[in-house]
Length: 318
Image (cartoon, rainbow, N blue to C red):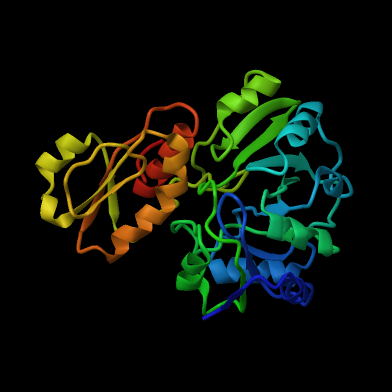
């Protein structure tokens, strides 16, 4: 298994040697490698078993660090970065040249950048002479990790070091936004709500449809899936159809008096539900249940992003 620790110097040295390190962020743990080293990037795809058509997010310490890699930064994008970086927002910008390898961007003319809001990782990024490509530190398509142990359970035999930043405070991936003719488009719902973005730059199109040729990470129809079949619907109706003794229950705030139940937020907080989502989906792995029954949250705030993950985990039409 991988070593878990807080040695930033060791993490930096491994990354400079072209090795991979799992890093903490406020959203989920990332599987990081030198974004400018094509061999390191290829290792990320190999370790995750990730298809090469699915682009990676590049992590930087600040907005200034993106400027050498991009043609331009739209005014609305710069405003968002000023307000929400560091934070759970990825901004897709047009590439300047091939400094960032085409493998990182899946051959696309744009690249997604993010400045993570985690003290350890920001310190690490400021020590490095290169940005980090870092998708979630889990096998492709599976539930994203929100603790060092989650990473070790899934990838501990394939990487040497996990930088321990504790449990992720947000718990779902970043929101991804891009610009077409300066018109903003959200490609993935995530840890920064649509309402907060629109309060700054006005109306935003949401285009998170699944695709075999995604323009950003997290757009595939089947994704974020646990190891057991997840069925979405009205829980009362589902419990009439499926046997309670062999069904796990994932509810938003209601207690169904089941030994195989996880309540995302007894107080009805979408923020608490987001933090618990991936951890609770993993809990069902150890339970003697055949299926997971789950319900959607109200379609507001972070509820939108949680619903997106649940729909992709169940591979229903979205």
